[in-house]
Length: 169
Image 1: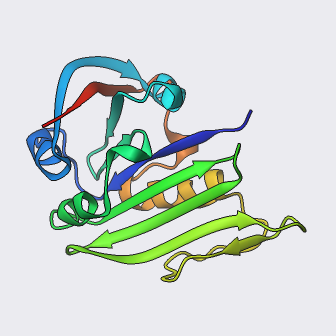
Image 2: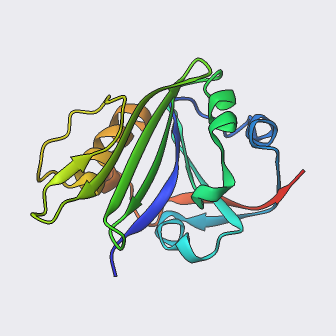
């Protein structure tokens, strides 16, 4: 089974601004615990949690894609650049959406065709992706490096994440 992750990347550190996340998404974040990045990557089956990884440059939130909407992402983008991603090696579907200043300004929806070439069904390209690129380890890593200062490969699996249970207001 392949890697399946989804989440949000913001070019600002929200470690001391979690109430803003709650407000934008109409969440209540409860029962915080410290976890590690490795467990956050495996969290795809436990849909009631969000894992936050912080660097001095930005925030990575790993969570189930149904827990955020276009409107909540636009609201968050008033506070910084936001990239939403949904990457599924199981379904062979990969999407990236870019939000800035209360608008979605870029989108990619990649699927493999019968010849195993990437077809981008997005209408607002913002990434430079070539056929054959690894959309998780090359494209996502490049975005993380730009926004967080670390690529996926540079994040130690034992690094700390903050895990919260999500409830809705």
